[in-house]
Amino acid sequence: MSVLTPRARSVESKHTQVAIYSMGGEISSEQAVRGAIQMHSKRVWRFGLALSGASDVADDLLQSTCLRALERHHQVTSHDRLDSWLMTICRSIWLNEVRARSVRKAQALSVTPEADLIAPGNDSETNIFATEVFTKVMQLPEAQRETVVLVFVEGYSYREAAALLEVPIGTIMSRLSNARQKLKTVMQHEAADAVRRSGK
Amino acid sequence: MKFSDETLMAYLEGKLDEAEAAAIESAVEADPALEQRLMALDPFAPVVQAVFERVPVETPQVDLPQPVVPVVRAGGGLRLLAVAASVAIIAASATFWATRPEPLGWVQQAAIYQSLYVPETIASLDSSSQALDEQFAQAEAQLGRSLNREELETLPGMELKRAQVLSFKGKPLVQVVFADAEGRPFAFCVIRQGEGAPNKDVQQAVLSGLATANWAQDGYGYMLIGSNDQTDLSGQLDFLTERFAG
Image (cartoon, rainbow over the protein chains, first blue to last red):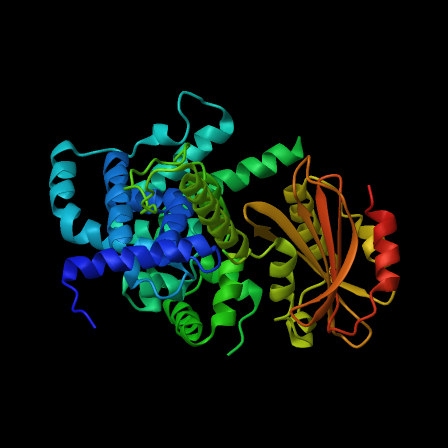
């Protein structure tokens, strides 16, 4: 039996992968990761926006997350829940590589939420309300904002969000309670509007 | 400890004191079913979700390196092979897409929620005429249509207990709960699906251990949920399809 150099071994493993594709049955972990990236790119971008508060940073975070995920596709053992795996990668890139730099920049510019992400150049009643909700959510502190987006927007359960953010469930629930307090004013608005409209 | 929907709603609205809120939070840690109930009742989630679903407007582009493709030497036959291989890749990804778990629909979610109801859940509800007036006014405002309360009060074998506004993916969902002759919970749900939603004939199925029937007509979805998997829905179904079929 011949001893392969590391390089030769990696070539061999690539060929094995191709063989797997061509048989059309099982899909490789790389295919699964590419599929997951395609399927979840909007969600990862939104999470990047929730973490950083800025759409250009969200663009960068999504791109780095996807490249990192693809590099690590061999770590994937199950094709379930690749969405939370992508979210975890996104958050670790944010915390370890991007946050310090972006937060410095944000403080310098004192950024306001980019409300035009919601309603570019349109001021119908619904859009005004949507912009208010969006702005309120984006003004929450980072920890509340990431939790609100994972649970309210992406539909993760409290315990899934707790695992993803590495905090106890109780912390998730109290962050959500605090966020609800701050979102209350704009929600009451909406309830009032709905009642008024239906009374017409 | 058991918590009523009213208590959970008060928690979500920040109206409970610290000790009561802490009791719910620690109960949720050990009880995924309670967690699901609480999440389903949260009035903030559907609103925030509807807003953020619009962001970003376009699917963001990601630049990825090309996948590894088989090395093809010259020659027509081998090129064909390459085409066959790429077709196989597409087929494999299509399989992946097709076999990913389907997200639960409103019918499944409503059945899960209803399966947590026991006779005690509805025994203590305030079903005074005044309470029902308020509940129906709110429910009808959310749905944008009448619920024919006078008719519902005559639903064969059932006593009207409560109408409650819920929400599924931002769509208003109203659950009307009844008690049968033995005091067991029975529900009639209506969801506003919006104009253009397809009509559906009546389908019966056992979901989350409960006999159910659902249909859709003119932008609204309807569902009946019995108290167990053996409940005979036919009497109520005839009554309701006649009154809620357009």
